[in-house]
Length: 225
Image 1 (cartoon, rainbow, N blue to C red):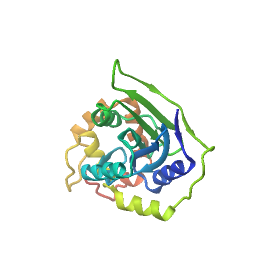
Image 2 (cartoon, one colour):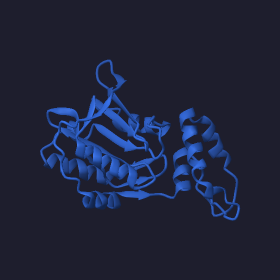
Image 3 (spheres, rainbow, N blue to C red):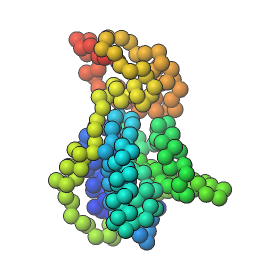
């Protein structure tokens, strides 16, 4: 079971709800329980409605600071936590590719996703021996102490690390569209091809987000794609 202390959980929810994009970070765990998240820590990143891209130098700095604090890599570099701006916590195609590319060589790792409505998804993966993976339950461990909620520090961390790309640009980068041009055009053929190749859950996510953005269909505006 993946557990969160009340304070770590509160911080995660704060970051999830601060903006309208995905937000990603690392779970810092207890020394004697590597599936007990004591802190949620972000690094500099570019985010969109369906993507998170960490800054490599920021990740390196984070790892160095954790080692300096006396922690081992398995305490801070094995739990990938991120939010979805929609209600579904099911991993997207991009999530799966990222988990494989970034964490595929670790002895073990966890991908955790939380949706806007509070639903969660957590999968523990082993990459040693015969390998294997399993979806595991998630729980907030209220038997742990409630630490202080430093909203000002959390706000400063969010504003210092999270950089949101324009929605259409993020969508294009994520799903393979050509760079947008300052002209009014229909959806590019390459975007439609990528859309058709998505998993059904990913297609539903995009459709739901489009439905929630009626301003995109205002005929008085020119939307650059």
